[in-house]
Structures are given as structure tokens and as C-alpha cells.
Amino acid sequence: MSDKIKVESFNLFYGDNQALKDIGLNLEEKKVTALIGPSGCGKSTFLRSINRMNDMIPGVSTTGIIEIDGKNVYREEQDLVQLRKNVGMVFQQPNPFPLSIYDNITYGPRIHGITKREELDMIVERTLVQANLWDEVKDRLQSSALGLSGGQQQRLVIARVLAIQPDVILMDEPASALDPISTERLEDLITQLKNDYTIVIVTHNMQQAARVSDMTAFFLNGEIIEYSMTSQLFTSPKDSRTEDYISGRFG
Amino acid sequence: MNAKIKDRIATGMFYLITFLILGILIGLIGFILYRGIKVIDWEFLTEAPGSLLTGGGGVGPQLFNSFYLLILTMLITIPLGLGGGIYMAEYAKPGRLTKMLRVSIEVLSSLPSIVVGLFGLLIFVQYTGWGFSLLAGALTLTVFNLPLMVRVVEQALTAVPREQKEASLALGITHWQTILRVLLPAALPGIVTGTILAAGRVFGEAAALMFTAGMTSPMLDFTDWDPSSPTSPLNPFRPASTLAVHIWKVNAESIVADAKEVASGASALLVIAVLIFNLFARWLGHFIHARLTSGSKS
Image (cartoon, rainbow over all chains, first blue to last red; front, side, top):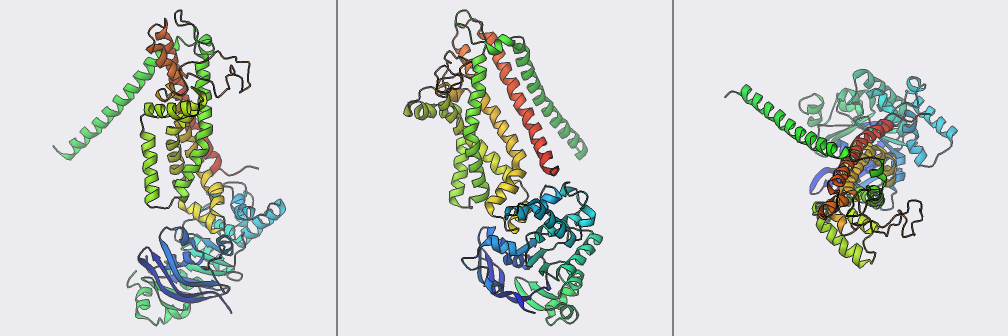
């Protein structure tokens, strides 16, 4: 397996405040990597650094390298549009647009230049099938996405991301607003998607990390304390701080 | 005194204040309508004012001028206000310059309208050489309507949930397309409501117009729709008195025979128009919101 994403001595500052310290890790292609750690440890900040969503926060500066397919996304000539088409993102709160289900999915492709009706229809069906949502919504594609349940909305948002054909999907606590059944369906979906996509998921739920991920990185105070195979990190952590965290002694 | 009694007294006070305000409002509007409505008839709405000494006639040209001036003002204000509001909400970086800009906008919106009127007289009437004209009036109204519009647009845009914006940006959509396709549609109900409320203010403005659009209307030929003709109602370079200015004028010139009736009728017209603006603004805001959130039909 080759490395899809390489991170080398990456630092991020909010003004004078250093939020990420000397991050270094390699993420393998078509694997699920979980980022765990207590609130404020920098795991979400790191996730948002990969598709440069932190750029829009005033006062953020970075040093170091994040490479995707061998190219530093922080290089000067990096096109942000291209980067974000390649690296999709799913947020904590399901955030469908106040449009129909159909228009939510075709929003990205349309702006990126696909206008043929048949082509758009195909994208909608393909991505909804991929996101395990097709059977539930195929008869009401033109009704509002806001009428879906939270779990359905989150799967719709994933379909919307799939519609722009990314290689990498970033997920920022995607199940934290969902009930247990919706969470289970989402986890099944993640397991399916890793056949085709490289997935990085931030989660507060350690059982979830253990269930869905291949690799896990433990963040604390802006640093990576431990990064290894998920099975190993949860059964025999090397660092005592990791052990304290996963056994529920803090965080 | 125990907390329960205090609570009751406080609640009672708030009810009292609310009813007091409501009472004043209803009394005022009721009085104006009561005095004015009997003056309003078809002739009053369409005829030009009679001569100063005999009185009679109506406020037809003034009514037309008020609406026409409003449209002209909005044609200038809406694009500028949208631009300014989008800039303030989406592009202005926090810092000295933005702070200064914000203070300037606030100062501009709180200037007394008579001062803005004098400024308009100097710049739009004299310096440009247009004389008293609809265009000078519209530009003057723009000066203090613009800050209001900028703030309306900015507030409507910043009220759009951040998740919506991030969702779009994360799909590789450019900032501009995100503004166009996600932020502006979501902000539209707020923008429309704010715009119509601002329109109500423009409609009732008098002080800023006395020295800019003028206090007289030329003889208008309502069959002549060529904007370059001097008697055409559409000519933006002709002087024009609006309803509000007309009310002021007939009362200031004490020789007008039927000043009271004209003022009552015109006041009632103004109040009715502003009420309609307000109700329409609420309705349209709700309507657009409902349309935008219900998904497209096919």
C-alpha cells in the first residue's frame, strides 16, 4: 500500500497561539484513519488543514508540509478549488443546502461544469446508491433535503461529496449528532467507502474509532502522542497518556 | 417585598408600557386615517393641485413623484448596497480599515436628513448643474439610504449558518460562487424585508428633498413617456415635489385655501403606503423563505 497523504513537521498557529506542533504522519491509500483525543487537542484543526479549510479563519498561519499524491497542498501555486474537489469533507452537523435532494447532489457537479440532464441523473443515482440512501429517497428526489432525518441528511451530504469524485474524504465527527441506529448505518457506509476512498475521520467515540478505522492517531495538546494500527493502539498502547485516555481516565 | 410580588409588579409594568405604546400608535394612525380618508377620492389621487388661492385639485403628480423617486433611489441603492454588504460580510478583514469603514457607515446613517439635503444641494444640484431634479433627489436619498442597505445585506449574510458556507467551499466551489449560490439565496428573505423597510423610510422623507428634488412639479403630460421630454413624468432631470414635501409646503405657505384638507389627505396616503410597504415586506420575506426551503418542484 502506498501513502496517499504525507505530513511532515506541520505547525499551525492561531495568531501567536500554536495549535498544532510538529505533526508528522503518513496516511495510507484506501484506509480509514481515525483521529482521537480530548476536546481542543487539535484533531479537528489538523483535519481541516488537509483541505485548507483553516485558510478562511483570520490569523491562521502554518509551516511544514502536507503532501497529497506527492504534492504539497501548501505550495504557492496550489489551486484551492482543485484541492477541495480532490479532498471532500463531511461536517459534524449535517449541512444539506435548503434545496431538493436532487439539487443538493448536483450542486457541485453543475458548478464544475456538468449540465446534461442524463449525466446529472446518473450522478445522483450512483452517489445515492453508494451512500446507501437510494432506496429511501428515490421516489422523492425533488422534495426538500431538510425533510430528511439527521442520519439521512448525513448520508446525503456524503453523496454530495461523492458527486465531485474526490480521492480523499475527511469526516469531522460525522456521527456526533446522530442516534445509535443512524450511527451504525453511517459506520457501515464508511467501511464500504474505504474500498475506493482514503478516509480520515475525527471522532470522540473510541468504540467508533476501534470499529471503523485501520489506523489511529492520538492527539493531545496539539501533538501526536501515538500513531499506529488501530488494533494495536487500543489493545497495547505504547504511551501511558494514550492508555490513560483510551481507558477513560481523562478527556 | 417578596420576589413573587416584585415579579408581578414587573410583569404588570411591562404590560402597561406595551399597551401605552400600542395605544399611541393606534391613536396616531387612527387619527390620521380618520382625518384623511374622507378627503381621498379618485380626483384627489389623480388631479394636480389647484391654484394656491382657490385650492381644490389633488396630489396626483406628487403621488407619482413619490413612487418614481423611490424607484430611482432603489435602482441606485440596491446594487451599491448589495456590493457594500457583501464586501463587509465576506471580504473585509478584521482590522483598522474595516473598523473605520463601519464607523463611517454608522455616522452616515445617523446624519440629520436636512444636513444631507444641504449636501445634496451643494453637490447634486449646484455642482452638477442639474438644478432641482429627481436625479439629485434620488442621489441625496441614496446617501443616507445606502448605509441602511449595507447593514441590511451584511446582517442577512452573516446570519446564514456557517455550515452552509463551509459545505459549499469544501466542495471546491469558489468564494464568489458560494456567495452567489448559497449565501445570497439564504439571505434573500432578510435582504428583501430590509430593503422594503428602507423603502418606507425613503417614501416618507421630506427634509432631504426640499433642496434637491425641489418643492414644485412642472405641468406634467401623463401621455408623454419619453424620458428626455421636459413635460414627461419620467424625465429624471425635472424638479418634483413628493407627497411628504407637498404636505410640508401647503402648510408652510399659509395662503393655500384648503391646506388642511390637502395635508390630511396626503398624510393618510403616506401612512397607508408605508403600512402597505411594511406588511408587504413581511409577507414577501416569509414567501421567499418558504419557497427557498421547500425544494424545487418539477
